[in-house]
Length: 155
Image 1 (cartoon, rainbow, N blue to C red):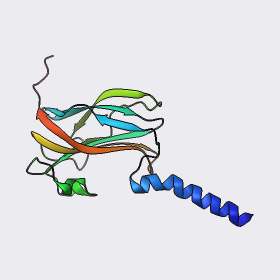
Image 2: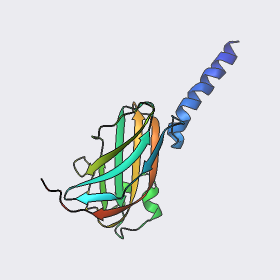
Image 3: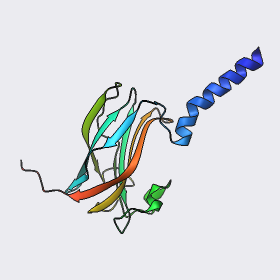
Image 4: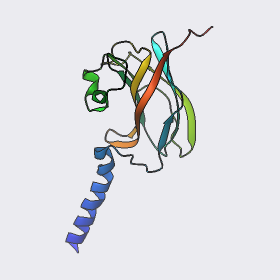
């Protein structure tokens, strides 16, 4: 009986940890879709995303570009910010996780440590991640998104 409970507890922990370790969403109903190109205006860029998550404490949005500003597999790998010429990101956007779909524009820039370079016209590898605590990945969406320069907004 004790062995069965121990095995069941171990299996349950493995199921909880597996999605984060494998890059899968801990929330099977969580979704994200990039709805717009990244629009760069001055020192800030915005990306429109439709997303759904039931819970989450932190949101990270990141965009990286290679020198060619074209798609390249090296930017899809772990640690690719080291080989990118441009990396803009933010952990500062507000978001809502209540199980419903939401559409919002998220900002990225070079304010946070490690960010660098200038996003230019072309393609960027984008990562959109919602986490619960430091280890549970609730939602992860990555993909290539077009980058375009925008006109300054009138006041």
